[in-house]
Image (cartoon, rainbow, N blue to C red; front, side):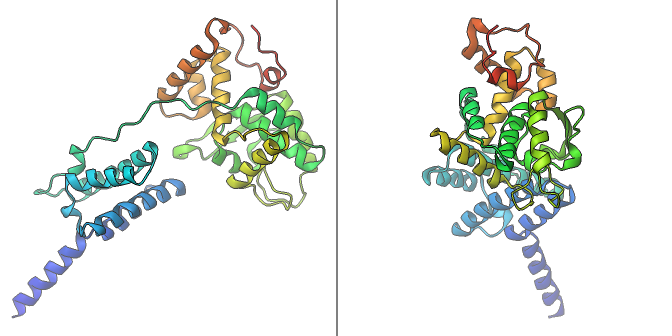
Length: 322
């Protein structure tokens, strides 16, 4: 009787050990211990929540019950529900990372990882268009005088001049910007990689106008609201939408300013390795795709001899001819 009770406790313990929801929680703890960014951890949390909910609907409660077909049916369900290819691929990557982690963590001898036989969903390799330089000029022209106008104009120029991500932009502090040199230190880029980018003379001039009018008791952030609080991602989006609505154009996506920076650097002959450093890319794959966009766009008009250091302000004024 006593032995049977011990065996029952052991079975219940092992049952809990491989419970899918329990293992997802352990996986997230591991990601936190590795000091991944909050955005990355939130990505895993959301994606695996969706997968766990699907598994529950299929009465799959334990990790070892997940089969190759379980994953394929999950991806098919996402497709039928209208998820775009990028979103489906993101869901697949999260499941793959989770199952590979469990395999390495526990080294189960009698279990084969089902995700190894599931090919990643196909992604169309298309390049999203950069922001239109003409529209960018109109957005800046729509910025009024005064604090808001100076801030918004400086923000638009800053995005074009640095190619930083919107999350990097809103995460900057006053101490990260060096007024004399125009250098901007991005401390927490994607994957926690730091780098230094630069702004040109025109952007520095507009930045000085903004900083002179910036609230004295504002947050230590470089970019702040009228009330002095740190500007958020949605707040930055509102700036672009507000200026676009004023001139009656479609507001460019925040990431399109980053693409504009990359394309302009390539147009002006910047070395790919140097551009990779400035953009904080882990590899050259995306930049190679940008080179095709530039080649198709410019054709014989590409002027590879022009120094890449020509600042955004010049080409916005129309000095684009070779």
